[in-house]
Length: 108
Image (cartoon, rainbow, N blue to C red; front, side, top):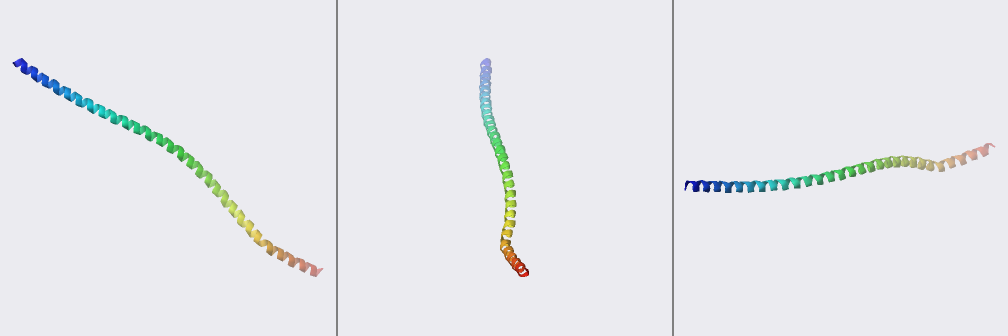
């Protein structure tokens, strides 16, 4: 009977150890799954980062092109203003020219 008690105790210990082992296996599988999900998420974030970097570079290039275009436009607008002023002066110059021609005719 003493042996049977020892066997019973050992069987109980084995049962508890198996249960503990099963719990640890489940915990490990859960942790592995979480790790895999995290690694997949990291890959997705890295891919998105690469896409964002490419888009950033494209937008930076576009901004530079637009900045150059804006500078050209500002110069063109300045030139246009100068030409408009010169065009506005033409009738006055024609009038002055007529007046000078008249005076010249009077002197001759």
